[in-house]
Length: 527
Image 1: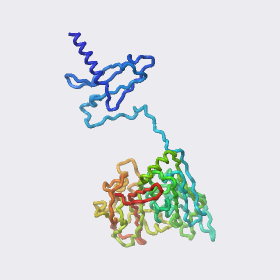
Image 2: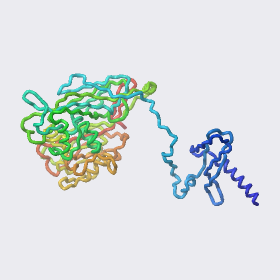
Image 3: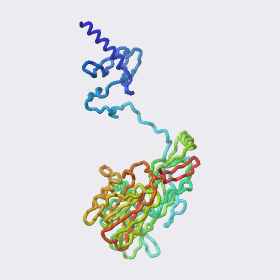
Image 4: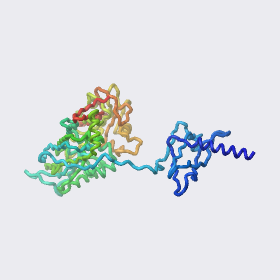
């Protein structure tokens, strides 16, 4: 009897060895052969599946490697019940795929970048002599280098001066505290135009400072604004139009005693807000118009009305653009592809508009966009005299002005669907505050632009309204919707004397296509 059992065990072992050593979904176990040993003397321990009277069970078996194998042998296992393999048959969903910790991938090697020979920043000088009126033109001539439009930096060297008879001289210690407005490295620019191959791809209009400021305030945390963005003259403030504010005093110190201040900031334009390189052999022209001194400067203490005229003197202006030298073989491959299809750049097109709200009104509606319906609209209100430039008022002091309700109407729909019914005097404005974070994708997230609830009430009142189908800021295109987009406002009190300016930032889908001959087609009607 014992002999029969022994023979049965041997036959069962042989059967398991034949049936179990197979391929299981590409998962392999590499067995390293000890040096100086014969292949038929190496044993491998495997967990294999076997059927018995009690059901399916996992057993450990030892098998010998096939003779003739050299330094390594690959043992593949197939048809193992995954739940039994891990001992969790009762707890694992049969539709769940297996997962392995990437920390065990000790045989992988990172990929090697073979597409780029080198990269560097090219300095562009103005095409004409620097004047205080502008405009300033910079041309990037076509060559065999690709360019990174997201790395176009504006360099400025500025000093605050005052009128002294017929001359202008730098301010000194006897002058009252005078500072530039927030983020002067960007807000110095009143209008930016970008032409590629004699085709205008971007024109900010005369509201570029508002686009730059609103983008910064609604995109970056205080950690970024207070550290890296000091290079562009951004110092976080807690209160606008306050001579004791830390941000205002920090901006004063940059120019104290007539010092020259230098700034570097990234140009904010649509093509530069995407990561794809611009094709080589492209001629690019940047045209920059500066803002007026009354808009750019603030003086918040005694002496601001003593008749002294202050100005911002430009000593130097340059552009720095990142250039990329691509491998010749890759260039040829892209050329051949361009013969069949154009290069495509998906960008987020932006438009900034302003609407004057006259004093004494409590309700109004304006048609702000008349073609495509935007993906998202950002609205802010500022005093008209600050908008036009005033030493005592920041042009970025966005306040609620007793607003009760604000809504965007497009394609027969109202956004938000339920009216806000705000009352800032009674601290009833929590919904638009939460909606601001929701629309920017920062609600319930570690990402934040660090605008507090108190700041939202006092100087940072932004109404951000998403118009996408999901009300989320997804990275893909939305279905094309055409029609008029209007904004309706209602106030609890009359608009103050002098009137208020409404700033509206709209965002749209746009596709830019460039063919083999470098002809450019821009299509905002994405379906």
